[in-house]
Length: 241
Length: 247
Image 1 (tube, rainbow over the protein chains, first blue to last red):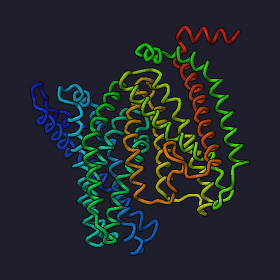
Image 2: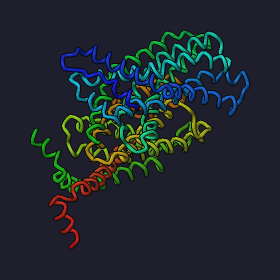
Image 3: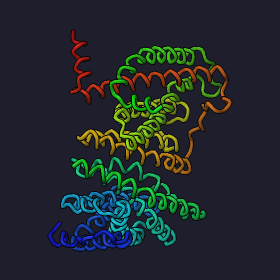
C-alpha cells in the first residue's frame, strides 16, 4: 500500500446513509486497485497460464480440449479468484483501514458486501471478459463459449462472496494463503459442478434454464448470507490481533 | 432449566460427570458393538447378490452415520459457542473434530474395500462418495484453522463460524453431487422407515450403530477431559486433582 492509497480513505461520518457509505467503500477500493495495476493483472495472467498448462501437460488434441475446455477454464478461474482473495482484506488490515471500517456506524456486513463486490469487479469480471478468448483457444464452439461466459458471470461473484469468509477467517495468520485454500475449496465445489454442468448440458443440446436458475439461487444465497459470516469472522480476526 | 444450562457450562462439573459416565459408555459401547459385529459377521445370513462381502456394512454404515452426526453436533456446539460463549461447547468442537475426520475416513476406506468386489473398482466419482470426501475436507479445514490460531477464544469462534458455513453448504454439496453423478445405492438403513433388509441383518446393524455411538461418546468424553485439563491447568481444582493422582 502506498501513501497515495492511504490518503484515499474518505472519512465517513455518522449520519452518512448506508448506501453512500457502501458506495464510498466501493469507490475507494476500485481507486486503490487502479493505483496498484499489477495486482489487477496478476490473477488474469495466472488464469491464462493455468489454462495454457492443460494443452501442454495433458493433450493438445482438439477433441480433448473441446470436451474438457469448459472445465479447465472454470478450474483456472476458480484458482485465480482463490489466489486474489488474500488481497481482499490484507492491505487494509495491515494499514489499519479495516479497523476504521469495523468502527463505522453502518452495519459492517454491508460495507463488506461493497468491498467484496469491488473485489469481484476487479478480478471476477476481467476473468469473464477474458474467457471467450481462451474459449476459442481450447476450441469451444460459439454457443458453448456464450454459455460458459454466462455461467462465469453468475458464478464468479459467488466465488468472491464465499471467498470473503475464508479471507476474513484467515486474516493475520501465518501461512494464511494455504489455509485459505483448504477452507474455501470444499465450499467452491457446488459452484464448479453447476458451472461446468451448464456448459456440458448446453453442448448436448439440453435445456440449461434449470442449471442457470440454480446458479442464480447460489448467487442469491451467497449475496444474502456470506457478508454476515465474513463480518462475524472479521470481528473475530480483528479482536485476535 | 437455566441452572442446568449454567452447570453444563462449567468444565469442572462436566469433568466429574464425564468421569462417572465414561465406564458405562465404554462398557455399553463395547458390548453392543461386539454383539453387533459378531452377530453380523458370523451369524447373519449371506446376501443373495453380494455374498459375504456385504458384511462390511456392519462397520461401514455406523462410521458413515457418525461421520455425519458428528458434523451436525459440531454445528450445534458452534451455535452455542457463538451465542452463549459457553466454554464447553468449543472444547467439544475442538475435541471431536479429529474423531469426525477419523470416522469419515473409515467410512470412505471401508467403502472402497466394499466397492472393489461389488462395483469392481476402489473408487468412483459418485455423488455420495464425493460428498463424503468433501466432508473429509471440511473436517480437515476445521482442524487446520483451529491449529493455526494461537488465541484460544478467537480460535473457538473462528472455528464456529467455519463449521456453520460448512453446515449451510452440506445440503448444497449433497444435492449438487447428487444431480451430478450417482452410483451409490440409496440409504439402506433408516430408523424412521420399515427396514428393507431382513431382520437378521437389520438388528445386528442397529446394535453396531448404537454401540459405535456409545463408543464415540466415550471417546468424546476422554478427549474433552484432556482438553479441559490443558485449558484449566492453572485453576485450583485441576492442581488438586493432579496432586491427588500423584500420591
